[in-house]
Amino acid sequence: MHVEKVGKKYRIQKSIKGRRLNLTFDHRPTKKEIEEAIALAYTDDASLDAPSGSFKEYALKYIAAKQNVLSPSTLHSYRGLIRGISDEFNNMQLKDITEETIQIEINRLAVDKSPKTVANYHGFISPVLRMYKPKLHFNTTLPAPKPYRPTLPTDADIKALLEEVRDSRYELAFRLGVYALRRSEVCAVTVDDLNGNILTIHQSLVVGEKGGLVLKDTNKTELSTRDIYVDDRIVQLLQKQKKGFSGYPGDILRELHRVQDRLGIPRCRLHDLRHYYVSMAHSLGIPDKYIMAAGGWKTEHVLKRVYMHAQEEKEQDMMKFASDYITEQLK
Picture 1 (cartoon, rainbow, N blue to C red):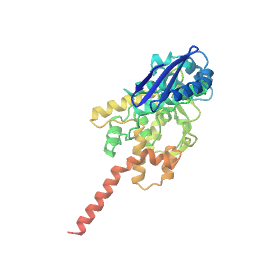
Picture 2: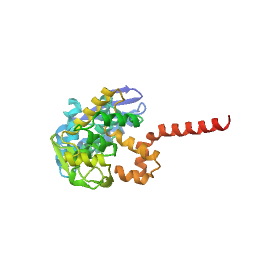
Picture 3: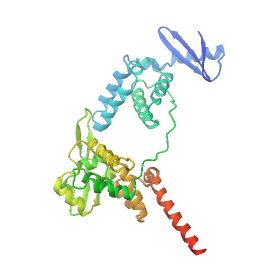
């Protein structure tokens, strides 16, 4: 038996009756501590409840078990996560997975993936292991999240975008984005959802489990089903096109970036137009509860946590206004 120092921790590996035990200590253990840890691990070893098979086998079983309770897009994303996990971890027998092997896999993913993406991988690995290896307890260290600061389009950016795509198949999609519709909602809305200038948003078009498009009778959250007032140009375009957008949802983002590059303005996503809507609505003095209703946000806390950055530019404008006023009075 060998005690190996790994960073600030001490690791011991020992095989007992064909089972490999991995023990980790925060300090150099005494012989008695090692014996007690081995005894505890041997009697309550998490591998005892682990069925035979690899992580990938049970990840696929987990997806199958959730088939009728998770959305098609979530199932599709889970299959994508499996493809992103290393072959070493995917092929590892469930009984051999430990807190350490999970941390090693997370470390590998963190090399070239964002903290949010790494958290998504961990958010998939964890429930698979909880379902099929419930005795395994692990506390994984994830990379610190980065501040969420998406690009906020200006009034001039929005005007230039809409003028550039006027009368194209993308104009309606961009205009609906300015009204805080999500891409899945833009692709699902039809002329049948229109009553005068009131547009009912109650469906979403998402990528299905096997990659095709699936029309859902519901959208992202319960409060996402909503009625909004839209301008006459949107009414005109929707009556002409019949749908918010006819095509693959990803086409909208690609065209948006092409137009932005052509105009020489900063790139943003269609989803960032929701940030613009919040900024514009706040600057007009519209109360938060009405902004939440228009965008389908669940709580005021979510609205402020995700979109408060949208107010920074307006705050600077107001402070400059105050400064100019003081300057004028003190002349």
